[in-house]
Amino acid sequence: MNATRVEHLDRGGSLERLGGNILRYGLVAVLLLVGALKFTEYETMGIKPLVENSPLTAWAVAAFGLKTLSALIGTIEIVLGLMIAMRSINPKVSAIGSMGAIVMFLITLTFVFTTPGVWQPGYGFPFPSPMPGQFLAKDIILLGAAVWSAGEARRAAAAQARGRNAV
Image: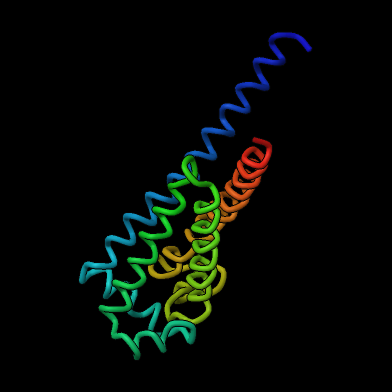
């Protein structure tokens, strides 16, 4: 293989590693920021139509109240973000956090089916409204980032365990 071809392949690998870091730590940043916002009044009111109309979360609104539920969701998001961020220190913890984020995003995506106003009036499916439709659509890419992060961190944890067993 000539030097130009090897250099070209290396640039692709560098971009792939960079993209992976952007995916993981972008996911961390979103979870930390959005989790912190769950402690504000405006974000609590913003999730109200989502959680009140979902059979998966409506019971929690009744049990805890909207403000407490919002804080609980925010705490979960922050904890998951911190767990995912631990990839270089403890990839197993990062994988567990990523799997938690997968569950969270799957639950959030069910709101597409239960929240009134997801589809733009006058257009309907497949035209999402700006809020909440387009707001929920971003969770598809966040779900993908969490799935990738879980898989990559699980592989790293397995490699780390093999390395410890070899010593």
